[in-house]
Length: 387
Image (cartoon, rainbow, N blue to C red):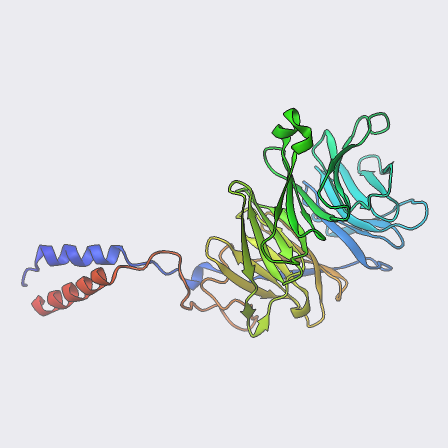
């Protein structure tokens, strides 16, 4: 047997080391979808959230009813909400698994449901502020309103005045609020086309300047549906132009993404949620599907739901569980997908076929043309020297 040149062999190995590794389809499974019918008599669901135990909460305004879906028992509970007059629920959040908070715009009030005691509590706003969302940090309630971010002491709500953090426009219409890891509060203004933030540290020394506002680059963006990832990036829907927006809170910079055509259909996002991997899940209501966006890859992947008129309205994420309210099918759907679904298989699942690996755009830098050429030459020379 003839010996091979060590230099050529080493060169060939070096070239192979810089080549990108393509994932194999065997490592991936198609998404699964489970559907649970809403209780009989359920009207239009207006808000949805998930508590720390993984149970899903839904609320309808007329008649005012709070539903709990026990994710373990796979069963619904129903709780009628006593209100005076009409209700219009615009926002809802869970404080652990102990309390559910509701923003009732028609009643100009915040409603708390004490889960353990099966009891409702009420806080009426002092003036007409049209509350649209509410979250709790354990000490304070933060309420998004038409012209301010309001702070309410939970323990002293009836004795301590509500704190007003005014925004720059009378009808800015804050529609969604989120709290970051440092205790700052972030929101989007639907009518003012801005992202806003409350700075906890600034509030201690200069409360009049605790609110900072950042105009979204695209005019008439009409932002809605805010969520925040582990890197402190805010994700929101620009409902005017139909874009996906991102605001980096560490850099105070925006990124706006036009929605792509997927499987021949132009994506039209309505709501979103961010998972633990910082991927963004979107509802594509007119196309009866949800979409997963991988920010690190810059890739959108569609996942079709079961049917042509399911109309996904709300979406939220709990670990590897993606919960979707299908208003057309009157179901709560549980979607599970491979963490890298869409990169090595056909994006839209098909029960009759096994996913097959397909070429994709990889974020890994491609080998330099010079190395590729050297590898080819080295391989050719090795072949010629072989017996």
